[in-house]
Amino acid sequence: MSDSSAFRVETTSRLAQWRIDSLASCFYRKSDPFKMGNWNWHLSVEKHRLLCVKLFPEISNITKDNPPIASFIVRVVTSVGDRRTFTHPEITDKQLKNNDDFVWAVEVPLAGKFIIDIEFLDLKIATPDGRQPCSIWADRLTEKRSNATALASLGQMLTDGIHTDIRINASDGSIGAHRAVIGARSPVFHSMFSHNLKEREMSSIDIPDISIEACRAFLNYIYGNIEHEDFLKHRLALVRAADKYDISDLKEACHESLVEDIDAKNVLERLQNAYLYELPKLKTSCMRYLVRFGKIYDIQEDFNSLLQCADRDLIADIFHEVLDAWKGF
Image 1: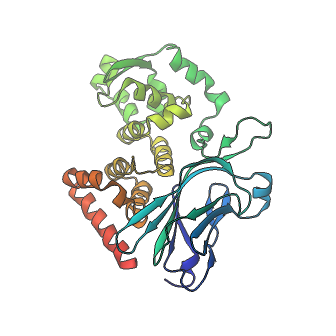
Image 2: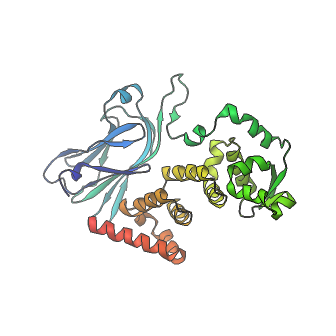
Image 3: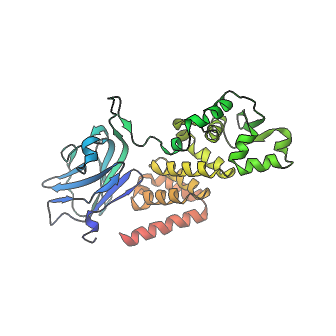
């Protein structure tokens, strides 16, 4: 490892990792700053009888005026011999201002190479009016795409079923909509209504691969009336519908959002969807999470199941990523 890379912290989504080859020649090391949320952060290690790990934000006007309120999990992973992981209990909503606000003394002596792994669960800032702190990762993208005043009437038309002229039949229910609205948002719908197809004649569209709840969220997005919680809950169904009906802004909104909260429980499903629906950023992030950040070892049983049923090209991509990682380690 070069001198410059010895202090570099790598990040992806909400995960940060600092790889340390050895502390034999020094007793203290502080990382280069790394970006997570609104702040630049540092990690430091101090070695005496035990190893002390610290996480703290870089001193700045942002930190002074709006210090982060962080929820995170810290792990130390040994990478020599038998792989071992030591995990600190989850930290929830702890305000961090300086390098003494979070200190973890690892009570197992470490030698050789190891990795400090920080999984940020949430980052919040205090609100000016003294209410509950607000998460900086609350969705902003979909809110920006919706102008509340201009789209309020459209949302009401859908919610109240005002003058609907088309039925959308999902797998477990149906909902009324408006040809003009959905045709303007989707070239696929527009084509259905512009030609003598059954959808035009029957005044209905069958979407059997989507639930009524996800279908309602899909239409709410089209009408500019989607709630953030519904968007998060149905992102995978929404990205499928967006791909099928060529609604590029919805597909991109789902793509960006799915990259933000990759974890061990969802990474394999998201990797498959990234491959299926051509989501390159999500695919790269999932690959890095699994391979570069070593999370593939934490879900070996699920990963083995994936290998038995995944597309051959996807499996080949995974193994190429593994080989590239081994070359650089």
